[in-house]
Image (cartoon, rainbow, N blue to C red; front, side, top):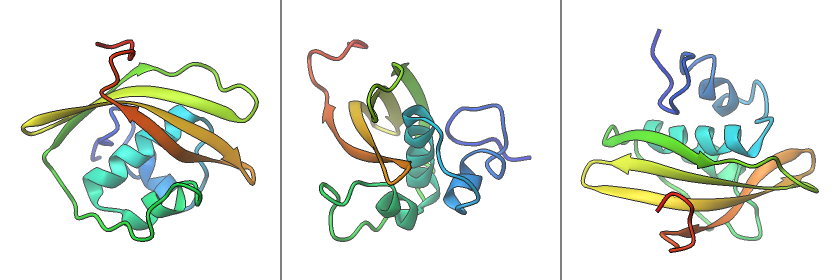
Length: 126
């Protein structure tokens, strides 16, 4: 059993892999955030494209598997309100750290990533 890169105690196949393979949709913004982080680790650009709001996503998302991602820590994930949610996280990469508060919306019955504030001094984890 290979542990999921998102930090859960489940295997990749049972956790984020099931989302990547379209076997189910993310139930919460937190779950979507974790699965998107894992998509960067395993190089699943199609999943990133599919889960990014069409209003804000780039035209092309190509990523290669990157084992230099070292871990994900969720700092804050309040309950979504009115089809909108936020997740603050810290993702460790070899040589640098990404600290972001991401925004998500429920669109056509599923959660999608909209955008985020990176390294904002107002983030709670700083």
